[in-house]
Length: 290
Ligand SMILES: NC(=O)c1ccc[n+]([C@@H]2O[C@H](COP(=O)([O-])OP(=O)(O)OC[C@H]3O[C@@H](n4cnc5c(N)ncnc54)[C@H](OP(=O)(O)O)[C@@H]3O)[C@@H](O)[C@H]2O)c1
Image 1 (tube, rainbow, N blue to C red):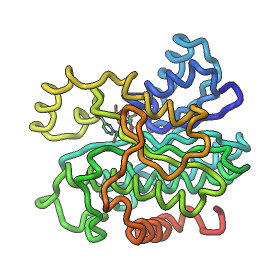
Image 2 (image 1 turned 90 degrees about the vertical axis):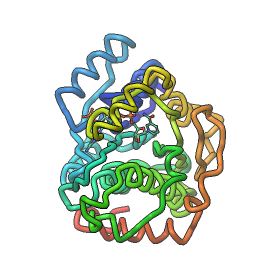
Image 3 (image 1 turned 180 degrees about the vertical axis):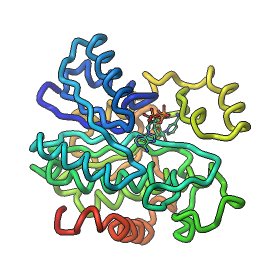
Image 4 (image 1 turned 90 degrees about the horizontal axis):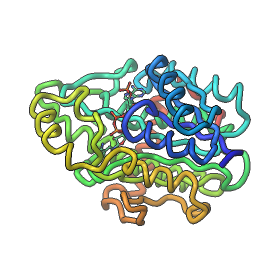
């Protein structure tokens, strides 16, 4: 992997950090795209110390802010003609309605829409040669519990009726729909797959979740998969020759192919989400740029 450049979002904690560590061991050039620049730099230093890989850069990226995403993509493109692997890993879970800078429901905005903008803005470095680049979207088995309510994506339903786990499932469904549609539109040029990493003992549900969710999660966490194992499928999809030409598929925590939910396989819904997303980000990414 010495000749590969890999960008990982949310690489300073949990599964993303473990994925970065594991890929650093293969000698890849890593770009840790994180919202907390200081934390990202500490992570890069720690990974270098542990693996001996000195080719670890950081890139400021706040997925809840379109201008930060655009700036991150521009900074990357200015320095790198090619991106071999993009791992859209960052994620947030919250039980309280919050909005992104542009007014999208936070989980939909960060877990999906921000990654849509990032991916499409990075296209000039991804679409370099046939199947040279891989786009990996970290989804979740929770996507099966999700529907896509286009009337809720800007928090229109209000705080009182907000259901955090439903909104999380919706965002993870969007990750799968995006993977399928990206493959339909660009599958001749790149490969893209999504995955469920397992139930992994990270701090995902400790950061913004309500008391009940935190308590349940704290009790469950000791029995969950440790983050370094939770990175298995992301690492497999990033580097294995077995999946060099595999695209538009959903993998589980054991690197096995699984059928995503029937809603996630709905082509009409995937197209509608794509068109919604293109419109949402159009001020930051004109269509002719990808
Ligand atoms: N843990 C599980 O059991 C599980 C199961 C299924 C799927 N997943 C998925 O796995 C992925 C990684 O989650 P995790 O469990 O490793 O959680 P985590 O430890 O909380 O890591 C999430 C990462 O995303 C970053 N992030 C959050 N909001 C961001 C924003 N606005 N801009 C940029 N980065 C942001 C976090 O940054 P900070 O460090 O600054 O907070 C952190 O680095 C997520 O997509 C999640 O949905 C997790």
